[in-house]
Amino acid sequence: MKRKITLCVVLVLVISLVCLSGCSLFGNSTDDIAKQQSTSYSSSADYQAIIASLKEALQQATASNQANIGAYASVYTNCLLNITCTEGSSSVQGTGFIITKDGYVLTNNHVVTYDMQVEDRDKIIGYRNYYYGGRLEQVPVYGTKTVNYVYSSVVGSFDNLNTYGLQTSTHALEVLYTDPAYDLALCKLTETAPEGGWECIPFYEVGNNGVTAMRGDQLLVLGNARGFGLSATSGLVSATGKKFTDYPALTFIQTDAAINGGNSGGPAINIYGGLVGVVNSKFVSVIKSSYFSSEIEDVEGMGFAIELACVKTFIRAAEESKNVTVSYKTVSAPQGQTAQSQAA
Image (cartoon, rainbow, N blue to C red; front, side, top):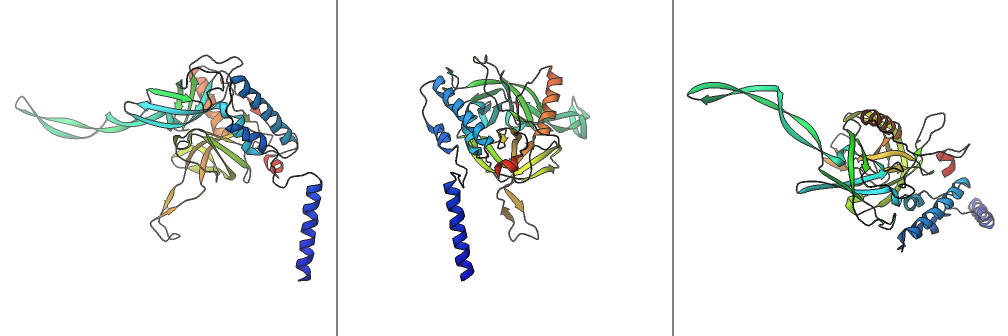
């Protein structure tokens, strides 16, 4: 009993010292500013002024180790596109985000393309009898192959129409380059960039160790979840370097941040506001095994994002194939900091 009383007294003293020093136990230094994301702005200038002040506050908070990763949801509102792809009477939705001031956009290949089974004339799988002019002939039966087609209509929309003072709510995207093996697509906004260029999400510039994300890092996921417009969820980097047989060329970040349909193609962002991955998929269930008591078990908190190194490899291939230059911006941690030390 005496030991419990002593522990309680020590805890009270610690909390009192923290409060007297002006520190926050919960790191809410940017929360009040972030609440402005729900404000209705009367003009593009008003909106840009709010974003500028929020960026400045985040930079100061990062330098003092008190940044709230969720505030980047407001900073990057005008970088995120709710993507709608249409072919005939069918349509799908996903997410894209601007990576350069001249309007290059990243998303998933599976967002802007669809697969169809077509006849493969190079694959004869048998013959069938066919009577022609009274004669019996054998006609080859061909196999099928999967062909990846780009949707005929790919458009994006911003959550806030006053972001750039734009007159239209939807903006056409040209799909320049896709790679099913990387599940990535490089697109470009077809309209002229506004004065000063499009707002864009910077890539996280790693240090000498080449590691963009580590287990335990904070992670922010932005996207058009379920087609309801921009939403933000956060979590931790659960693991890195994950590989799957469907995508042998890729490595993935695993995260417990909530990911839903429509989030595909959205950015995964670290505490410095830098891109570390592109959202790809999540596990929703597993088949019965000796470890589970029922046929299908729900899976919680297993989402995946394509690691930044793979994204950069894809961009280099796109630049070479299409003879374009994708001049993305970068951001890095302050000297002597890592995402984990900053978050602590």
